[in-house]
Length: 309
Length: 157
Image (cartoon, rainbow over all chains, first blue to last red; front, side, top):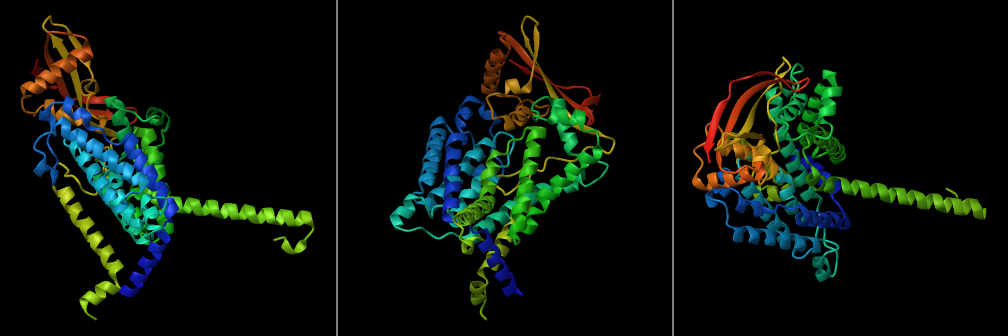
């Protein structure tokens, strides 16, 4: 029985494996994203210290007040340096793990102002992708080695498990909070709440509330949310379904952005490792198909029937 | 077969079980501790669904700034808190100036005074008054069905 599970995990891991070039693309994109859009904590120095209270956890033991401007500047510089090292693929495993630690620390400082946000999957992605081999190709490390390094599908499978679990953690409280009840609308309620508060609206929030009068459609959105988030973890050992589910999740994120204005751009890089191998395989198949068709066309024109496929 | 040999032979299964177990344990911790701890592997749950009656409860804050000449101007929470990242601005406003928040310290009052002067173009400010109000809205059109009396919070500037 365990042997069968081990074999199943092995096959799933192999299916999740991405090639060095695909991982390198994600590595560079991730590093660029951190440099261009990473947290800048300079605002901490301009707001009242009384507002600062570190969230429960390891940071509450070390942060008894907001860090000073020097510490914040050092943190930002280190973040940019590590992102640069990740882009170039220099000591990739070390720089990736260190980048995760810096991203988590920067978030901990931000979340010390009354609310914990949820970008942890983006912040821990470098650790998993480093072990997946995102430094194996098109990197200074590979150049120093003189050869391409190995890639690991098992690291991607573990990341898939963590991402799926994270999504499940969003779905279960919803299910317990009445989102399953056919008589209680959740998505519509939160769109209405945002409009009532007039803080932040999605580009289509008002239009949706004014034009989607069918509560059945709104309830479908609630169930789609529960399914997209809650079932992803079930498909960790069925990579093809997992990838389809990730596409559903992307649709969910687009819907949440359009209805409530909640940005999800970082999640494109979280999901990239699951989707880019499929996209690049499709592109390669398409190119092979074109080459075969082209050879067939040339053969027909030359009148050689033996090469027509 | 020895346990170590078993682990070596079925190491991927062992790692998956271990990671799954750790994820479960940290979730127990994450949901047991309030407010939410960090870092944990957790995604936003929003909150409870609306009521079956088609209504939803929320709390709003209406901010008014008064100067010593008796003039008053209404502003939004986001205008006061624009120096914070958007996602933490409203929760921080509630933390500092909510109905049950402790008295703001002198540094916070100085920051608030400067901020309100920038936002309102008023000077010689006397106080910021916040009406914290529990409202019930109709989710069909976001209209207010009922509103409880204000719980007032005043900060002298």
